Length: 47
Image (cartoon, rainbow, N blue to C red):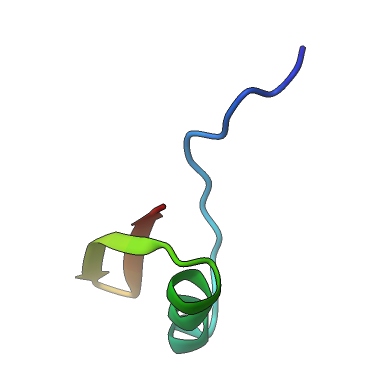
């Protein structure tokens, strides 16, 4: 079977500032969700 697309993936990170810079600055993605929750922070990006 050949992969046709990836719908979703998640990666835990320890440096949110650096990670946001990578996804926005390097990959050019846009954050669609920015959610702070108890014990963490959640972002979703799209291209």
